[in-house]
Length: 606
Image (cartoon, rainbow, N blue to C red; front, side):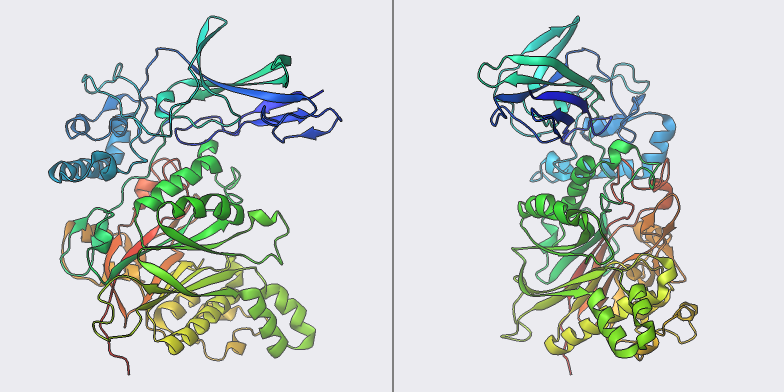
């Protein structure tokens, strides 16, 4: 007979909007052990599993902190209530929490004021339709304001079609909320305990057989959301601007590009990120938080790194398709990796179908380039060792797009407006600096060929795993590497000597260096300058963990054909490390996203 051996939850804390799928271990009639589902719609040998979810009916109402959702709130921002900021964002667990968050918290007030003035924008859209998660509670017990406030509602899908019943068990009242193995908490569940129940039933009679297995969750918390980041204009007036879905096409010749290493689930372990709560490291939570963040940027082109194959196919591609994006993906090669093929990560590039169409795609496999290099230039006795050093499974994805916007051909009638976008993730190991430099050089030489043949503007985005001032960065930003650069000292097989001259002819400039180069004294610009390294004109960090804080992510562009209009504001280390590094409940990757808006230049080529 079919029987349930064990049941447990994947995370100790349920979060609004994040699907819960309990782990259910079964023994089948033949004695085999399995985790495969046996739903009532597909019985096995006359038996199936019945699932039910319940919500406790306790009247206890507890407000939770908007910054630390596992902590009870002790104060509320009255200005948030006055300005009609979503109630859940007004709560804080301590005066220090509120003080630390003030710099970004006040931006919610400013945003709310602008929303009130702009009658055409709904409050929900202004704050992001995923972020408006109410606490579902009153302000009883708060040491701050004593104002009666309502609760916001998070729309997480239709109301269940079955009637809600209340079951009395051991004096406790439970309301039935679900009848499937999975359940996605809604705003109605906030601060309530959930109970999962499963039992084997006889398929014909639906009569339970054996013991009922139950498990309780902790109280449901609202989904924490990253603090809003604003676009800062760097060309023209020095002003602060909010991200707006309509602003991206305000100019017929502008477009925006996002580059973001989202942190592969395979690498998001509690051993590596012990400072991050385990529930915030779970993929079921992180994927929703990442999606909310990415969609909120309204970028025309997305360059994502560390996207697992299965997550691209089952989540990002279909979800972003709903928002008008076409998807491209290149999985890392697997000569070194020997695990589950679906867990191999790669680079994913998305572009808005209403703004671009695909012309051509190129896939760069550095392993193949390594094989060619060693065959031609390495002595036979060293080829195997050299190849072992070079093969790291890294790749690049290059796509040529044609724009659908702008005054097509106004400056050159009949000419197609093309754009080349490269998305890459370079080898991570610091001791392989020669391999990093060789990979970057190989990519740039390939892009040079495209540029010569097509006379095309270029963007080079990604996680280069190399800090400002290193040889790979110098090659990208300056077009060459000083022969005396200390990074060139590591070249055990003479790989770099085989690349001839370490230079290229692409007029590449780092987008974020615009903060350091621009004039003006606007407060927002000055703040960003303080977050830049004056020696390298790059951000102080794009990767912030317990063990490393530094810049490894970049957006480069060809300065003869493109110019930067605005940039997504940088974050300061203090705001990220108030309690922990990243990832954290608010930020679901150990990298921060980079976003640049560009304008196409009128140009005359020789």
